[in-house]
Image 1 (cartoon, rainbow, N blue to C red):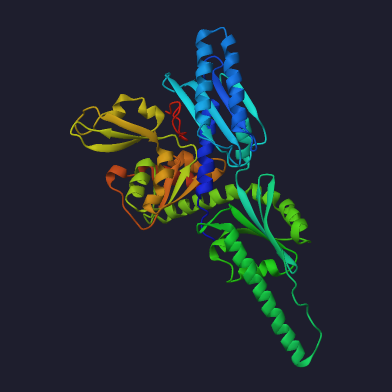
Image 2: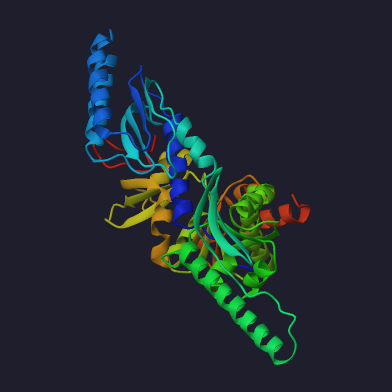
Length: 453
């Protein structure tokens, strides 16, 4: 059985960008003073700056003084942000700038610029009452990259598929000895030479696979497809020569009629439906492991915000399971005696004054700072030598995880009994019933993926 597929740096980066884009998409400004600037790769920063200068001049014709000043201020801030870039990044540049209304009704200024995960194929400049994120949303729809190893008796090809973008990473050919009909000692010698050549070929294929699909000792694709027209693909999948991390990443082995580029195209065609279900399959696997651990009642699990964060910060968590849309905030607070602690609240809970009253002293707690809990987790989980899996609510298991467990849970390194303060026994009984029925950034600051609109 292969290990759980945990979220790697690219997965987390894509998740953060998805959250950022959602925040930008939902934000609204006054008038038409919110700027969207999409710059494709190959464009020139100097050209974009000239265009913005021209737009600044045109803005003088806006009749409303307030809107005119807002537009010109946003353009100046956009130009200031562009100064941070000498060249347009390899995948292009997306810039969003303007004043928007926060959840508390107060005006917030936004000025963020970043390189998307894959190349932009459009150029856009818009002034509106909202940010236009469509070009980025298309890129994120297919953010997962899958590796392909096309291997047969003629050679090997390594490639990736991300959405509709296929890339050949490396390929080489081989001339292996054919079978001989000679008898006696010759047949033994030819068989030995042939086996040695096949072994050396598989060694080369394995070494290159490790070099290509491991970055900093971690798999850099969501999964790997082994494909070929002969027995080599099966031999490779079983071979001790193939690095165990690459082997664990293999999600399917398929038969194809060709090798090389034609084989790559055929493997992609045959894998389309399978790959579309891979992410949900991975989510189901980790959530079902959590459910099974709970049924075993071995105290090697926890769920809910307080238990999970307590377990994480105490080094008990092996794998943390996090719903991609968890909306809790992490508040750093200080009590009347100067003691600092942390509260984890939903936006609704944070609006209640009682949430910030010290239960012991009945005094009001001072808020020092706040941030997205999900952002804090993804920035800090490595400090505690933990892994993380980010899941959706798109599957039946994912929906049950969100509704029954609050969208956050963990598999623990060892059995641990939480103190009564963190007790979830009541919630656990609810789960068992369901199981049985099977049912602020300012202009000029560096971009922060959590804008707190």
